[in-house]
Structures are given as structure tokens and as C-alpha cells.
Image (cartoon, rainbow, N blue to C red; front, side, top):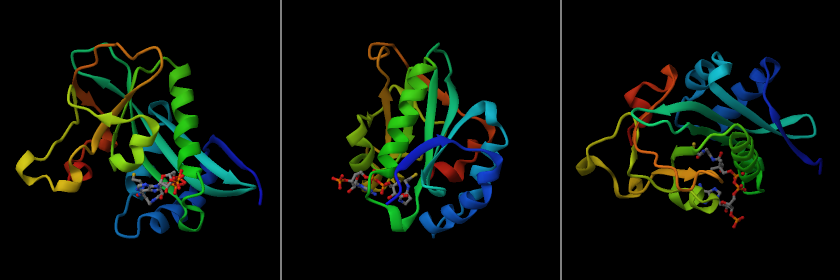
Amino acid sequence: MPSLTVRSSGAADWAALAALYPAAFPDEDLLPLVAALLRQPAEVLSLVACEGEAIVGHALFSVCSIVGSDCSAALLGPLAVTPAAQRKGIGSALIHDGLQRLEAEGVALVCVLGNPAYYGRFGFRAESAVQPPYAPPPESMPPEWQGAWQSLRLPGAEHRNCAGVLTVPPPWRDEVLWLP
Ligand SMILES: CC(C)(COP(=O)(O)OP(=O)(O)OC[C@H]1O[C@@H](n2cnc3c(N)ncnc32)[C@H](O)[C@@H]1OP(=O)(O)O)[C@@H](O)C(=O)NCCC(=O)NCCS
């Protein structure tokens, strides 16, 4: 089996991403979001995982800020691994690589909206001091969404006081993307 590598994505990778997302998310069309984020390269860290030449996974981290705080932050998502290659550590490799790169850039906090059973293994924990840009009222929150809004303080920032509302890049400013 070819070894796994993780690298920054480029324009030539779009065809592979356009095939990867519908396969990984058959019930959700995330390509418009991904395309819009990739059009703002200064605002994203876009990583692809490759087995040989084949792209088998993709992770996006968006540069964010927190209103009323000097904490530098990022939002993880989407994260996609091609179905035939899932549960082989590819998602983990993308996350670990991204977190290392963000730490080197001095980012303090990484947020994610996702399954705590998955993101918890990387150290993400339920976040309440930093709020997502849109949050459904608690009474409309399905039980499986409890704890879905999470964050991770990167090494060196464990004791930083990060609090406030996360400001996300424009492609993320669509309430639908934040609803259960
Ligand atoms: C979720 C996803 C990105 C994980 O990537 P992956 O490469 O399959 O994950 P890994 O192999 O790194 O998984 C590491 C561990 O997490 C577990 N895991 C994988 N997917 C999981 C999930 N959805 N929920 C809980 N645990 C999960 C694996 O069992 C594995 O545990 P193990 O090492 O004890 O076997 C991938 O399954 C995927 O693309 N799914 C469809 C799209 C999606 O849901 N994306 C995330 C939301 S943005």
C-alpha cells in the first residue's frame, strides 16, 4: 500500500475534491462551501491526504477571530475521507498535521462542530466560553448534538482567556451550515 502523505492543496486538486465530498457526504452538498473557502486562500489552511498520487482525504481550517478577545482562532471543517479509506487513520493524520501547522503559526484555539466521540480523541472538549456564530436554541437541540460545539487550546495557549463569539469567514456565515 502506498504511504500516506499530507500536503497543502492546490488548484489542481479540485477535481479530486469534487469527487471526494459527495462520496463522503452523500446526504449533504458541501462543495459550494469548500469552493467558496478555497477562493479565499489567505483565510484557510487546506490539507489533502494522499496515498501515492490519489487524494483520499481533505481537511479545511478557517482563520477566525473572537469578538472582544485577542485570541487567534481557527475553525476545523469540513473534514472528509473517501469511504473506502475510512478508519485507517487518515482523518487523524489530517487533524494532527493541521493542528501542528496552526500551532506553529501561533493560533491559540481551534473550534469544531462535530461528533464528540470522534473529535474528543484529539483533545477537543465541549466549549462554552467561545460561542459559535449561530446556535440553535437549546430546546431544539437533538440529544446527539449535546457537546457538539468543541474546542482545543493548542500547546502554549492552554491558559489563554479565549471568550466571546467566533467570527468566521463569509462562506461560513450561513445559518443552515450550523443547524442540526
Ligand atoms: C469522520 C471521518 C473524517 C473520520 O476519518 P477516518 O480517517 O475514517 O478516521 P480515523 O481512521 O482517523 O479514525 C480514528 C478513530 O476514530 C474512530 N472514528 C472514525 N469515524 C468516527 C465517527 N464518525 N464517530 C466516532 N468515531 C469515529 C475510528 O474508529 C478510529 O478509532 P480506532 O483507531 O480506535 O479504530 C470519516 O469517517 C469521514 O469522512 N466521514 C464522513 C464525513 C464526516 O462525517 N466528516 C466529519 C464531519 S465534518
